Image (cartoon, rainbow, N blue to C red; front, side, top):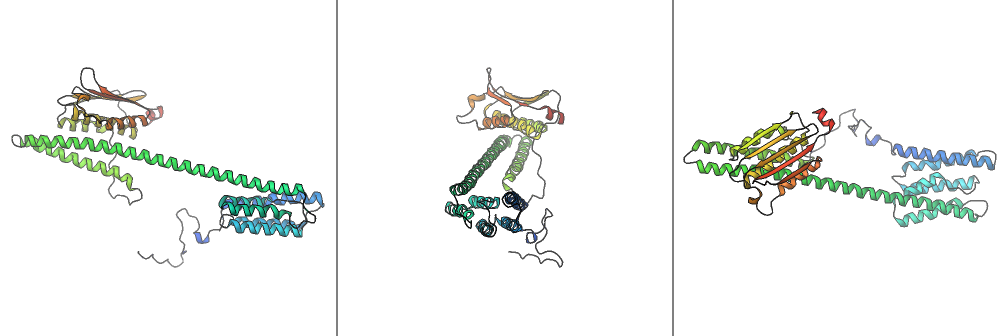
Length: 397
């Protein structure tokens, strides 16, 4: 393990944190919320003690006020040492009972200390703490406590315990919901990665297979055509590796960033390239763009590209000797894309296929769109998707 560099003279050993806060060594041992709770409990106890003393005696004993403030100070450490905090509070309350005769009381400081123990300790410890808290306000009184005093003390303790149990249950349910949402997000990301991998691998491997077959068939009598097929095969393989590398970078969260910037995700502007590549692979394709072209949100553009890519890949696999067409239509409130061919269509597809269509439907559903896919009456296959665009997206475009 490499040695840490020595601290420069005059610098703090703890170092400065990025947010500009003081180092941990110099930070206060309590949080702002702890301080607010401490001040609030002390104020409530002082007000209650002052009003009660004024009504009973006609004056407020200063010693009682001091002891109430001292009893609240341990609450500053209640998160780090809840049992020690409760013990200090109860001892100070006992000193108050012995020094300043007061009626039956259950201070706000005791409530906060017992609540903290009930939230953070097991049931046996909480039961013991609750018993002590119920008995302590009755100790040191000039007269024996009556039934009302005992019932009142027990009711106060029970109310604190019930509140703490309810908060613990609410906290557990929130944690369970957070874990469920996290698991769902992971599952969604896995499905997205699976869709991307399927689209990339299916398209590029199919193109490479067709290019390799074409090169082999033309190697003897038409070397130039074979050379062009091999060049296309090389480019398709390079593009597949680049896209897969970009996709798998998602799984490398926390690693050091790559020095070279990654290429942007494909979109509608890349459709002419994929159409030309499909034509070179042996399937004539016509691209027809209708309506007023405009920029699209990146996620919508990627969805359109993947739909066209997957549909043309399936056409090359199963359509046989056929022609295909890609129609992209810009509307006022949405975008539609249609890919059709006049080949063998679904009749040539093997049983069990259809993961590409499932990926298309999931992509379109994420944008609130609709997708139709099926064989045509006169032969061939058609994939049509409609993606809505909100008014805000239209304005941005």
